[in-house]
Amino acid sequence: MKKKSYMGLDVGSSTCHMVAVDGEGRVVQNLHFLTSEAKLRAALAGVPGEHQVHLEASELAGWIRRILKGQGARVVSAMPRRMRGLPKIPVNAIA
Image (cartoon, rainbow, N blue to C red; front, side):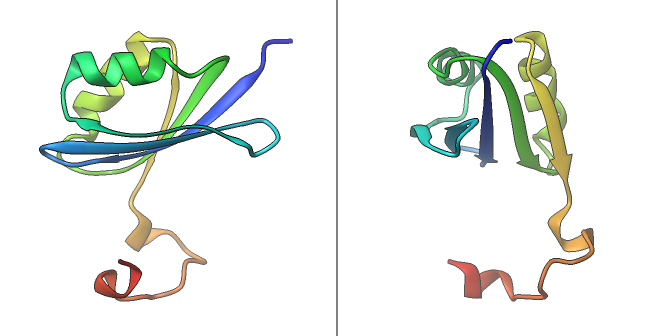
């Protein structure tokens, strides 16, 4: 059975932040990189195993999804403000 890696990807118009964990929850990669297809592919290539990527739905989500799916990743995108069960915390309180 192939090992799985789980990634959270925060995509901005100029930079991205990706954190990847293995099946036991250990961080295997924590990267900040410029937003580009080449940088995203390189970041994904540096993580072992099958990839499952979680990202927030945004204007760039469709573009990111096409790149990641082309690399064989499973992509999950969500709109956190519409997800039930999340606390209603003002965005500026999280930073």
